[in-house]
Image 1 (cartoon, helix red, strand yellow):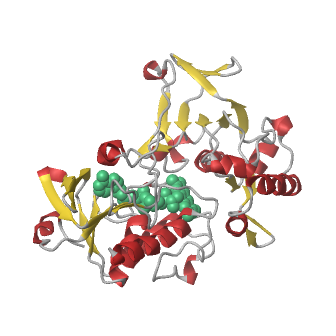
Image 2 (cartoon, helix red, strand yellow; image 1 turned 45 degrees about the horizontal axis):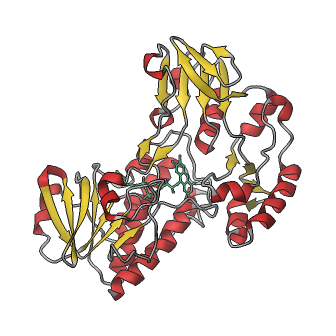
Image 3 (cartoon, helix red, strand yellow; image 1 turned 90 degrees about the horizontal axis):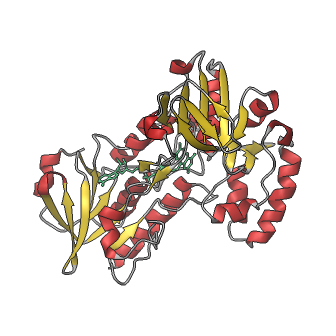
Length: 383
Ligand SMILES: Cc1cc2nc3c(=O)[nH]c(=O)nc-3n(C[C@H](O)[C@H](O)[C@H](O)COP(=O)(O)OP(=O)(O)OC[C@H]3O[C@@H](n4cnc5c(N)ncnc54)[C@H](O)[C@@H]3O)c2cc1C
């Protein structure tokens, strides 16, 4: 891995890849495979920075076989559901195996067109010129904390899920987890198993919950198979499957959603993979409660008017892409701040500017980034 100062030896015009996560590394490997020089710029001090920060119990909920990046499969010894630490090991090995050119400690703040090239503004006033740019800064870039009334003056402990590591600090405590996506659901289960005295889960929109695998068949494979089918058809099939595989938890405060599973995916909400939530809710060890409405001194006010006083509030309320400063001025983002294109396609106003990792498909993001990497490399090698 190169050091920040080595960057100045870049005398030809490489393709720059911003971000040394799985998306950026996959794109770099695919480009190298096609003979295109690619330099990865990573703001932290190592590859896989996002995975190094994730909570301890995290495992991929997509299978090892379907999560490998181009040119190097994940080893069998990692098992079917790969742990966080092994994801990090894999990314380190991946960079080494493909002999990727990676410069750490460099944060790119803005990208501009410069004739037929791209000018990157980076840490310490650096300006780098590349023939193309792949933006791989991550779907989960900046923690999103809703601006609830009163939350600034809240006197209890309040943290975002991105700062949660394990249940140890919350042993014997009363914890409210806000948000029931995959992260909120898993943290609630982790807290309950790790000895929290009480775990409540604030639910704004009831999620679709799917079994991670049924009789050995992973939910991800179903996601891949149904991906191109009509939304209404998948919604109907999902409803039938859910009635068979997931018990009715309405009495416990988690009714079945009234919108279809695939319709929700199309709106950006992937289903929650069950890693213990169903059992915990059924047994009453994780208690669904109404959404958070506001904060009052040491109290949390829920949407049904209930006031509760947990010791800790953990907000699993997602992330922002935070691409506005980097590329917002180039007309390449939609109204939600997401790139208008991904993979091998570029926009006429920004030829040579590629994006990977900003979709959230039902078929798995590692898999999607592996596919996009090949498409980017094919397109860029032709240009
Ligand atoms: C809790 C969790 C579990 C997940 N589980 C799965 C799963 O099981 N299967 C699956 O397929 N997907 C999963 N995903 C989704 C996705 O695969 C991961 O988020 C994955 O890490 C995305 O890879 P990425 O390279 O796009 O982004 P990241 O891994 O976030 O990497 C982005 C990199 O860019 C760097 N960076 C950011 N901004 C800049 C900048 N301006 N300049 C330089 N460097 C920058 C960051 O430091 C980081 O290293 C999960 C996501 C989360 C949050």
